[in-house]
Image (tube, rainbow, N blue to C red):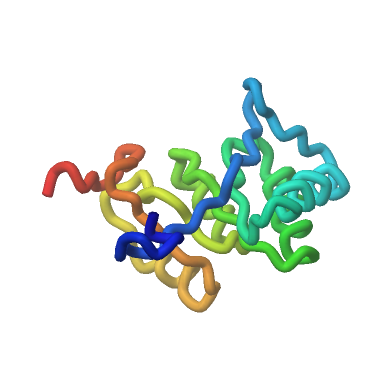
Amino acid sequence: MTKAGIVTGPRTFSTGTILYGATGSYKAEIESLEDATFHLKRMQAVGAFSVKSYNQPRRDQRQQVIAAARELKMMVVPEGGSTFMHNMTMIVDGHTGIEHTLPVQTAYNDVMDLWRNTGVGYTPTLGVAYGGISGEQY
């Protein structure tokens, strides 16, 4: 209704169907840059300008999604992954943003130094805390 102008509200963006890496009913198999490009073009064809890379288990798979997205001028937001080092590689590899809280209570200067000036955003989504600080406590 907001998009149609019937009610006033915030703009809502969706990444659409996730690029799910774990075995399931809609797994996105990514074993090469060509596979990643196929999935991103499929999403782009239905209007997506960003994708959610979700549970792609290997770093090279996530990197292939990022490379394909750069070619197609799309954004990639990954699922946090619930491990601190997983999040750190997502920053280093240049995802558009990190979703959900970091799974640590305190991020020290080394993390801030790594993250600073990367252009990688952060959406803490405080209801999905992965062991970090949860918004439900405040």
